[in-house]
Image (cartoon, rainbow, N blue to C red; front, side, top):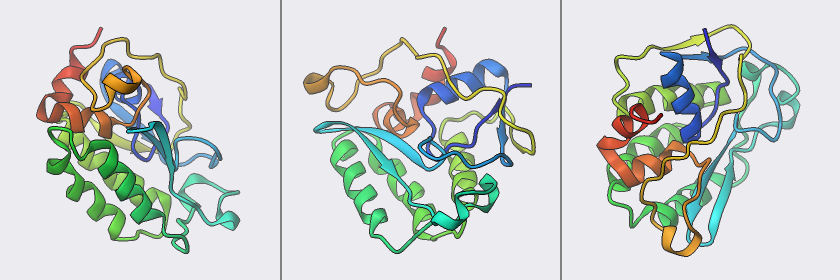
Amino acid sequence: MTVLPLYLLPPVEWYRAGIKAGGFYVSVQEPYAKQTLRNRYRIAGPNGVQALSVPVQADSARGELNQVQIAYAERWLSEHKHACQAAYGKSPFYEFYDYRIWDLFEAKPGHLLDLSRPLLERLHGFLQLHDLPLEFVHQPPSMDTFPEVSEKYPQVFEDRHGFQSDLSVLDLLSNQGPMAGEWLSHLE
């Protein structure tokens, strides 16, 4: 069984790995690793690739992933929403997903796990991956790097920056909409 790391808004490659493995078994108990996609995601905006980070309480970032607390002292949520609107506001499908993603952020869950888990569940539904299990397991991840997906799909700012890979699945959903899951499932 392939165990995937718990990522906030995982890259397309993470989803491809889960599909190839025949299911999404996601580790919920591992040491928190700074500077990873556990609390970050990448989008393609008008100025190129932008990394967005959910800040965490410093004192909780030294323990297990399930103990990491989200810091709300900064105005990061409005910055994330603004950046995603600038990146995907002109995409064909962003408006069908944005409010269903941001409502999870706006609920202000206390722990990173309490945000990541429902996000993954919702994304699983958006991608129509119902035939593949999504389970949260208490095992360490068996993979933390993913092969780049060579297939391309249209992106909003592709004319300016070329195709950008290793982006959050939010990019794929915003550009492909209901066809995103099928696109993922047909990759070689």
